[in-house]
Length: 293
Image 1 (cartoon, rainbow, N blue to C red):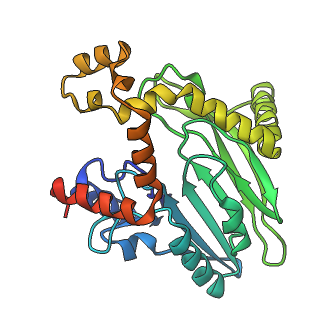
Image 2 (cartoon, rainbow, N blue to C red):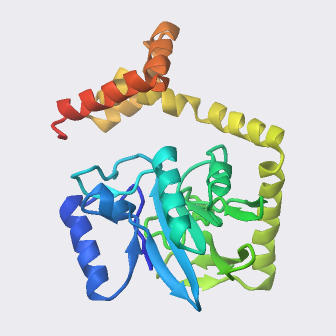
């Protein structure tokens, strides 16, 4: 079974998604998380394993690839809709597993567990993350990359995790993490042996210390924001609209990206982003302006 809810599923447009789905069907490979409209994208994958009825739901952050009522794409991360999907699946299944193409540990995965998810497995961040057991529900925050075919200077992008889930009807889901590594030259993926596997698990143990301590997690989150402040402010600058990459890069490195970003302007942007009505209006206005109807 393949999960398709991710931010790249529409890289080749609706035709590319349809070709992907057709290829999976022709090979008799099941899939979940994307479709030619929102209803299809949100449909759970159901399977009966030794008398245990299991539902798998697949969500992704709202980036480039989101399905709409009459548009193809991926099943979006939306607390209200996701809650309804979890409850509907819970009513007719013994176990519900949520696989989320998501970002950071401050997202409300605890809420998903409280509403009926029996396990939550995350990926998207390109690097491995930690895990926790919340009210007997395993939450694995990031498996990292399984197969990454582009060249990157980030060595951690070539190390990932497999999650092995053990499921029975009466008890909570148990899991085991298996560290893997990808060879850059031929894309071969293999299980790490004892010492290297143990090193990855020690790394995860350190990450878990941060996840389980809310003060440490908050501090790590703020440190990340501080480290990436210039990058994100540049996305709001006029320089980001300059078509020539090299001109844009020079202006941003010279500091022009933030030069015209007054605090009053940023306050306005912040208000428009966090106000539900303004945010919805801006999104629809930009979509209409771009001809994305």
